[in-house]
Amino acid sequence: MSSVLFNEHATGDGHTIGEIVLNAERSLNALTLAMIDAIRPQLKAWQEDTRIVAVVLDSAGEKAFCAGGDVVSLYKSITGEQNDPDFPERFFTHEYRLDFELHTYSKPIICWGSGIVMGGGMGLLSACSHRVVTETSRLAMPEVTIGLYPDVGASWFLNRLPVGTGRFLAMTGSPVNALDAVHLGLADRCIESSQREALMHSLTQARWQESGTIDAHGVVNRTLRELEQASKSRFAELDTPVLNATPLIRELMDHDTTEQTVAAVLAVESDDSWFARAQKTLAHGSPVSITLIDEQLKRARYMSLAEVFRAELALSVQCCRHREFPEGVRALLVDKDASPAWAYPDVASVEQGFIDELLTSPWEQSPLANLGE
Image 1 (cartoon, rainbow, N blue to C red):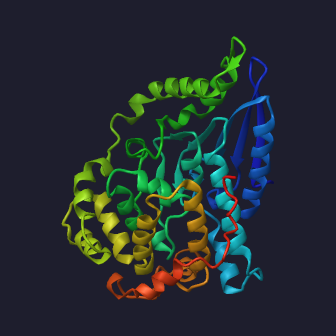
Image 2 (tube, one colour):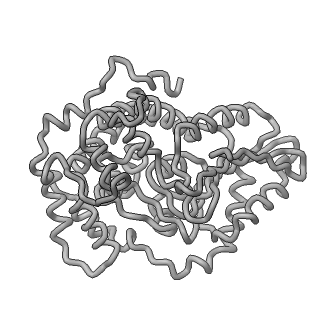
Image 3 (tube, one colour):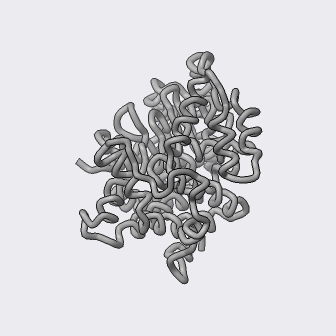
């Protein structure tokens, strides 16, 4: 069965809703190159099809929307197990093009981000015009655990969170629930997961054309607003650990060096389980990743979206040429021994020359040079 399904749903007034279903439930809908290369031409076709008024992006199963990119295939390419040395550049180039195309799509795209939304899944969710989360949503950019850094446009969207929060979430890989996601601006609507079928029903029953004009974004907004109102009681008692910790996070992120920031976070004594988990991940995360995260977010702060994807492509490819990333994937996802042999014992030991090397583009002209043209 195909790892991506494409459906078209007729509306009552003669229009059509396109639906993209990530259909790899066993791998938590991890995004593969084949899936990316299937989605991009379908999006283009629907963009040009006047019958299509909106697109829904969702997934098979209830556990995850998308748990990330296909890092195991990246690992196999890097280690030579898969004889395709150009795979990392091809994978990231195609993935980032897809993300950019979603960001700039003219028709509304509703992303149903229920369950696990991590890494590459965050890239998809963040790029859609209407981002829905449910009571089961767990959003995170946990690349610090595998020797990478938050990519897929995270250098852009994490820099737009409240002061210090994006940096904290990147360095600690901390999960974000639905209420916190909306508060931070990582999502737009909290809707109960049981309303999934009601969403498609409402979209197909809606009046998409009034007096000869189609206001597709308005129709989608009204539909989602009604479903969110009907879901309010489901979220009434949901905690907001990120919101609660915002003053502390801002204080902790207000230091002069990465080393000082890490030390400040780890020195906090807290009974809060969410914060304790953040400390644990930070303490065991890759020192190279932590340092890269800090530097990349600083460099990308005033970049355009296209510039961000070009910078991330260069950095991601460079990370695939050094040992930290494959070692992190090996320890977490391949051998699963949870004992990565990081290149440096702590952040203070990370050499600036190594970071500068990673942040140097491997090409004279980026494969994404024409992005946005």
